[in-house]
Length: 220
View 1: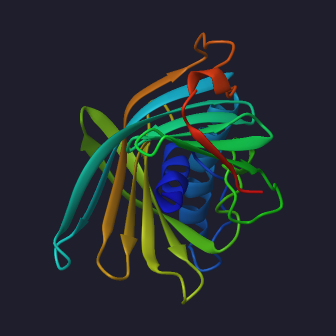
View 2: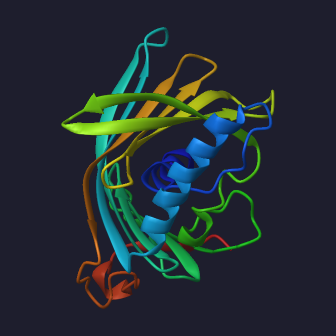
């Protein structure tokens, strides 16, 4: 679940990238300029509400799975619903709610933990450890999508490359394609993107009364 939740957050928002030293100057500047536009656009919103489609495929392993999810973000808080599990972050604590097990896990958020995800990290997640380059531009679903390719610098990274598709008209993320060295292809596509919405006052607040029969496990 942690892998899927992390992937969701990464896929739905742009992060800042360092330039690859092996990229030609013209290509490097074009990619940086486009990414800067996406970052600036995302940072200008009061909140974001995103519905997405998730698919993972590996023909050799006979894996073909699809799912949908939704995430709401505001400031340093988020509310993510994915594969029947809800993950709520109120800015201090993370609540993982699993209705199937009637269980809630409460954990503290450590900003210094490299593996911990939060909205204020989404613009710096790829700042280290990747080289990027402009990739293909193609029409998709009535949009013009420009891809930026990220290649992990570490040889031990299990990912071969990551492609981030950007709608050139809106400067919003359209999709993310992660290709593993083992042939696994993970695709996350934004099906609906709304911003500056009127959200409930307790949208990012955990209300214990809503889960009277749930077992609460404090992980930290």
